[in-house]
Length: 160
Length: 285
Ligand SMILES: Cc1cc2nc3c(=O)[nH]c(=O)nc-3n(C[C@H](O)[C@H](O)[C@H](O)COP(=O)(O)OP(=O)(O)OC[C@H]3O[C@@H](n4cnc5c(N)ncnc54)[C@H](O)[C@@H]3O)c2cc1C
Ligand code: FES
Ligand code: FES
Image 1 (cartoon, rainbow over the protein chains, first blue to last red):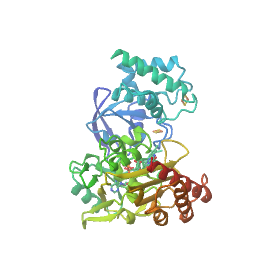
Image 2: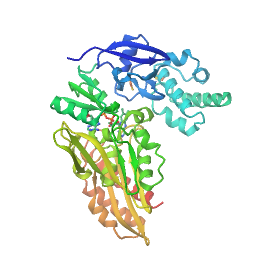
Image 3: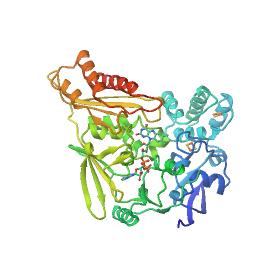
Image 4: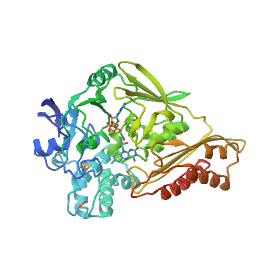
């Protein structure tokens, strides 16, 4: 009934072709088919944000998007952002501020913050507080994550 | 958790989409933002055999504001409404409500029309369309378009007047007068999630008196609705603390609240009183 389909999109800057079942979510495809396990899956219902990825410049929950919907689109994941150096300031700030405990939520927060800083380098502190409330962290109590993103925003602004 | 298998279609035109829905005879679902449908499919609460993915439509109307109305097409996302540059009262109400829906990554995908079709009783957009007297256009391959007033659209918890082969293709909201006042209040346990109870108030102040008073609540009963007797209590009156408290009291008495383990009927009634009161106070600030 449901056909396995060819799919082409850009993944972290590289043209990528795969075959997927329509019911494959982007999160599942990344982790199981492409072995990119930096995108973590917590709730599978769009609530926790651990699976956040960037599609055509906007943050999206990879568990609520089917892979077939990516045809012709540009997908960026934590692996690509880490490799191309674009989240270096965020990574350093997360370490310095102890914003990582168990680490399950970390890649989701980094991707979310990266999308926010890219779309608005002058993002205000209050907007950062609202931003981080999008994702769930069971460990840190959010204070360190807020401080880390604020710090990275300052560093990024200075560099531009 | 893996959804049941389905066929995926991404039509380019509304006609094509309506054709696919008609052909599937009830086994198809429209996929818009996927922020309610995909989780439901992951948990197999929904198992459509065909998905008509409307995200690639090229002929869907967008977001258009005219002097007398605002039209919202099927692919207008929550985030687009939140960032809407409009400075009319109607534009301001919608942008303010959008800010209360989910979080950024949910808003970049989720659509206005998808939220109405999903018909969660606590949806901000459900509340908005009943409070603002919107008209919904439903379209099918066999019967073409028909217009349904928002007050007749919601039929129950996640149930609407839309038939299975119909698509919500546009929502039209009449403009608010430039002098319109509005106030919104909601109570929720967590930001970024559905509220428990929400209230929206709209009116005009003419010569110090309130006219055209509209008070709507959501999350209380199985559908959002206007509260006529509370509106009537304020029509023609000068705004005052006492009047507002009276109207809020009436509102809390005439609702027939839903109950859930986190909020029983008494709790919801109290929330209706408080949210209506706050919305009224905010409307005269
Ligand atoms: C973490 C989280 C928090 C959220 N918080 C809120 C909140 O605070 N307030 C709120 O209101 N919502 C909230 N939502 C829900 C969100 O607003 C959804 O976007 C919305 O309910 C459904 O819109 P959608 O475009 O994603 O539709 P989909 O999920 O794609 O579809 C939902 C249903 O509507 C049908 N449908 C979609 N479009 C049409 C159409 N044009 N015509 C006919 N049928 C159609 C589908 O077939 C399906 O049955 C939240 C969701 C998540 C994941
Ligand atoms: S796993 Fe996607 S939002 Fe939780
Ligand atoms: S560090 Fe453990 S969930 Fe955030």
